[in-house]
Amino acid sequence: MEKVKLTQEQAEDLEEALHAYEDDKDHMLNVFVRAKDTSDWGSISYFSPSKMAKALYIGYEVESYKIGDWVKVETQNGIRVSKIYAKKDNEYYLERFPGHFKSQNVLGHATDEEIDEEKERRWWHNNDRNVWELREGDVLILNDHGYHIVDQIVKDEKETLYWFVSPDGPGNITQQQLIDEGLWEWRVVYFSEDRKDR
Image (cartoon, rainbow, N blue to C red; front, top):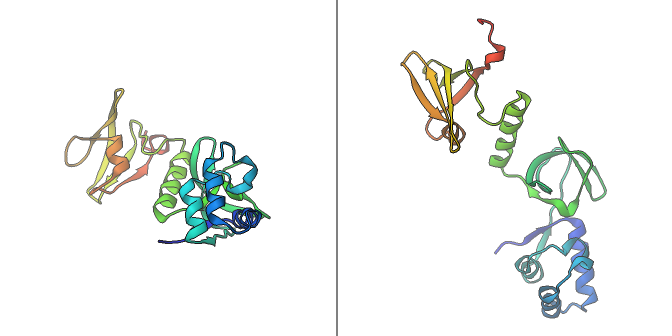
């Protein structure tokens, strides 16, 4: 089993708590699991019982973050991925988020897949769109098989269907299929508002 990754603050709080329980891991874990309110445990107060047990019995590594690292953070709207642009003590300042995040809100380094998803989300957001939100007149290319122009959009409560005009004839695809990609590699050539032929 691999060690638990903790921030420096969490490691210090864990060691302080362990010292308060005279290095008796069993007793400390029992108190932590049975406690109705763990808010006075500092940055380790939100640990799950299994994370606390792993940290105590398997061990932990202090995970450090530096400027430029992509990390996962806990926000009011769920877990988000962003890049650290500044750091001060145990506080991290992240791109596209106001204020700072304390080290206990940083959940770990983002995976390559999570970073790619966030970069894609940002690209679409910078073009005033949700991910794979197409509009009539947008032009795409599919695996170098010619241009596909969005001709019609059909929406219902379950999905959005895009109809294309292309050299191969008409075709369609759902927004979810574009998001999932799979075997196909769709790329936006330009958006309808950028077209010069209109």
